[in-house]
Figure 1: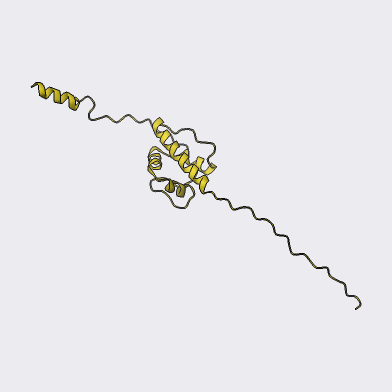
Figure 2: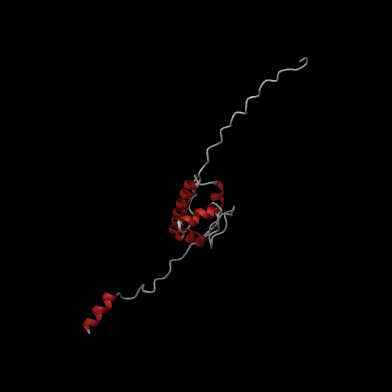
Amino acid sequence: MRGQVDVPEVAPPAEIPSAPAVDHAEMYRQVAVSLQTWAAESLLADAPQPLPTKWPRNVKEWARGLNREECFTLVDAPERAIIAHISRLFAMPRVRKLQPLPAAKWVKQEPIADPCFGQPSFATIASELERH
């Protein structure tokens, strides 16, 4: 047959190796634990502490603006609730959503007066009663 050209067989396309699936669960767990530690240290120091450099940028931009009450909430929260909050699965009550926040400035807290401060102890009262 004249004019007919043999067409070479085309090889099937080579499979492009897909990137391995990345499991962020452990990273979120580590950030959640670190966030609780940071919140507790901030409360003890009565001022926001320096943010860890290993945190994701969006977490750092959010955490720098947290107030004292939000830090108390984070310290008391279960780890899984913090993971869900920072991974944006669901929001925690009493904590603003993950978003850039302006840096918080905490007003120094005065220690709460102990109602028993200055009062005689139970042992002192008991010894006074024995004398009479």
